[in-house]
Length: 230
Image 1 (cartoon, helix red, strand yellow):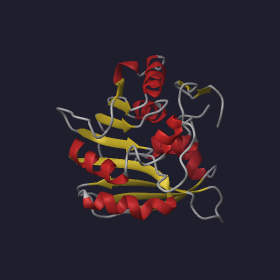
Image 2: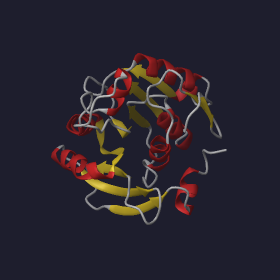
Image 3: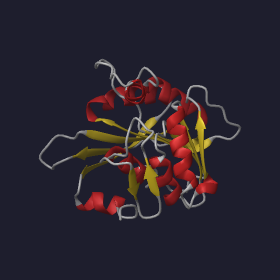
Image 4: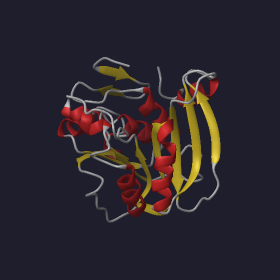
């Protein structure tokens, strides 16, 4: 995906000020997170919001939810804020320049979603903002799990999308912070190829895992994203 603006069914997303652009990972996580929940989350935190894409998806899906979106890049916060203000959900969306590590709240969240930085040993990108968005030097899996455990309600969930080869790393940190894996979805570009991405949902109170596979463009993918694409 490229271009300065993307039009979805109920909102548009501009991205010219963001290092990380609108992409399939965000679309998938915004469509998939909490989709099997037995209750509607009323307070949602989107960590590393970038353009605000995932927060907008969740605001559309959960019409009673207040969605807080945080990012440490001031340009991303400004971009997300503008995208929120031009959406039909403006009164339920808030963009804040804030790190997860420093996040404090008087009221716990029902759901936390994050398309986290995942590179560890690869070369740093010359673009400092892309480095910040893509490398775990700004937010490690351990910090994500630990802070999420602190900020979530007892029945709250943490949902992420990461490269499939990092699955065991994320799960280990989540378990150490008191979570169990409640849902797993492997994402493939083709049925015959190994999964490139995996979506994971963690819970403090659920100790069984629902496993599924999704192929980009297949019937399940179309069903999952049909309420967003034009």
